[in-house]
Picture 1 (cartoon, helix red, strand yellow):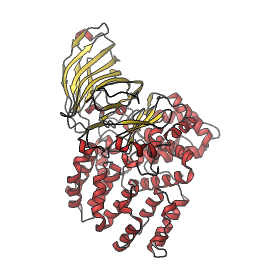
Picture 2: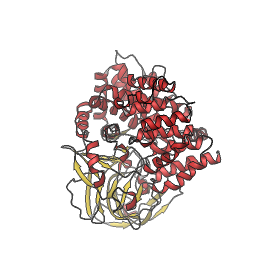
Picture 3: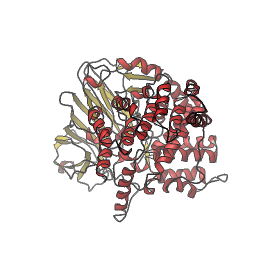
Picture 4: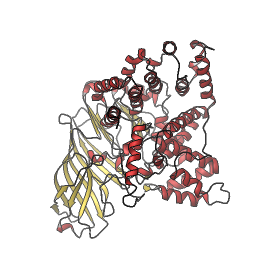
Length: 633
């Protein structure tokens, strides 16, 4: 997933308090997934079969899930699954000989974050079975945290509804009863029944030529973790981008999407050359409506993508490079727990930069590295030391709050550190061995460390040792010898910001025509804090920041607008908040309004008007932040 959301002081204080609270409890097990109820040490799912009806009127999925399970503990009598707001009907055990027996079940105590455990008693007739099926009839809630049901007016075409999922981190349990943990990988198949005029797609073997018939069949033969289960249904169409690649979108967005993502096939070809064979068949994109909460989601075979990338100049396609890179780091080799998320996001951020360097050149990659590094430094000022390690203690809190720059940018810096220490060729050899060794498996930070130690650190030529690596993995902050990215073009932009603020140059003299969006972002962030509003107005009039089509430039500008209380741009700031639902683009703008000392009530009012268009994950995150700001708790 590409969404480096800066963590606020308030969230950091909450997480720190939670960590402090658990320090005196039972011994912490870094290999345990504390965000799943499932008793995976006793039973493990091997395959999932879904047969679901998509009901837009009721805003629900309903039907049947069948889990092919294996008993690991002969004495175990109860199967525990993860659920959240699911209505469970009949539950049956399917025995190998074809016999089907009813199973008793009950719900355990609900948890605000984790949902509700579903406890299924194994009938006496199934007590001796090692392999069996667990079949559950169920329906989802209209308030499922994974599903957003969009009425026609919130889609690009305005004529047909749409629904799409977002299962990461622990939201698959709100649309499928299952063992919702990255520690378990499953294959799956599905039959999805829809209104006949709409198309269904999944993180599986989509057929670009599939006729609209109201019934669609899918197969995912490679085992994946539950957070990569994905579905979307709507008035979407397909266009090819290359031999193995294409894009799905509403007709109104299809032409722009084809232009924006034209380099996807080249990205895939280059990725295979650098990282090894692509093992997922096709690689397609699905461009969703603006309410999609993230930049992208690496659902295998079909990455979900925000329309905020449609800048018209291919300047934001690093998100696509990131999601594609997940086909190796994350999808192929998966973090065993959410505490190990840096193995997913940090390594993918590193692979993304390597891929972008080949296709778009070093200058552009240097710019993006510097901007990511600066966001990381800002986060390190607010995130408590307990949470600054790449692999911190993580047994409480909400996994959705851990998608900050620590896992992404610090993880990327760590891997760049290793590349610098061993040389690119030797490090690439290590990465190739890593992907081959752990393909279609899950891995902990400790296992990665052992593999790194065996493969690189113990070499006679190694200049770093295990203790150096452990500082990155388990200690706060950045080591003294951490790489410091630099960019000549961003330094030029910063210097011009100072010159313009000092009136050494006019607005017309700023060479924006030759600048990248990343240089524009750096220019805005480099403006002096005491710049008066009349100068901001001059800049906005000359460069059109408030009307930019580029979502990242708009994000950066409106953060500054809110921080500086540049009220003449507030109308267009609100338009920005209504145009996008991607958390990265709007959350920091709301936060800047709430924290500027004057506009907390205005931030709440703007949110109240816009929140019906946001995904449940975005809505919940902004609501928590504004409520916490209000109460001061």
